[in-house]
Image (spheres, rainbow, N blue to C red):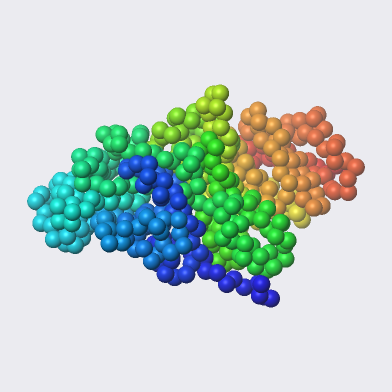
Length: 524
């Protein structure tokens, strides 16, 4: 190891093309044994995984294999099976880069790809209908080359994901794509292999209702690690990075591995899935040699906040959550259930499977996801501008650490002045949700516990020098809140310690949407 702990290996961040990754000398985790299984076991596949989880790289690797690019696979498991003399023609449709605000946008993207294929293979379009042209392209390529066609579709659901809050437009996109993809069945005799990837399971989306030949591997145990990184792969491919990063951060390798596990591990995609690390975050960690919320910072779908705030579910009920395994496997991005959508988009994952009841227990996969998601929701509750101008979690934490409960409560009041107004709003629920978000995020800086769950928010916070016991009421009064603290004597277990103890009773008035009174007492 070099004395300064600098990296020697190159870690691919954002590189989704197999050829570029291999020729650039980047670390590549050999996922080609999974591709061999796909080829041996079938012909048509669908895979759902969250964004930034390696789906595009997987499809690009399959494309290079069928294109006969044998030199790229040197030393990889799939190398002996490549036919470089008789490659298959590959049609790779990537819907991830388009902007889909109207039907014409989707038409443009599909038409552009069809024109590219028609030009490459000298095909004259015989119809203006996109679905008919696609079928003719597949058939004509087979007739021209004598080789069956490979079809790869990356982020097939991006148009609908972009317009999930515009149901009518999403339905139009669904109908267009359903007709377009129907060729995967009608042109079967000309197709060698086909795979579609996306965020959402397809069944309820109805695009593939006629495509019963597609095998969904999204919940299959043996394909659970086809995307993402396992513990064994960390040992095999990242030992050098772990050594360098532990040196730089002054941690033992054991301590560092535990920190990495807490931050980026925790994904499971089937009932007996291996532990899966987020690949984008892990690559970013070793490329930059520091921890960060990399996956979440790369983008959070805005519709998630709208769905949660407009729904009838409390943030506190999102996780842990129990859901029927069949229901989850059949859900789609157009589902009205936020728990299903949070799973599809990677904010929740499978933590446990109950075989007797055929149920999954879902929860946040790791610290990165939970922390980033809660920060995003808190900003959406109070407004990003106000959050960035002094209502950040760090500001609250500094006041609690500094023994300044009055400043903390006043800042809390400013936070609730930022909540939006609507006749449909349940302010008691929103008040409790916002408190829950804030205090959960404060857990990064102090020990936080939610003590009750019977309609109130009752919180305990402990920093290095102080203990705070909160009782928060809605449409009541702070005296009642304080009386409850004293009646329950919440502070007794901590009275013999060397920390100052503050009792704080708060009342929130939903009519004026503010904390209208509070009491702070120090235990003597």
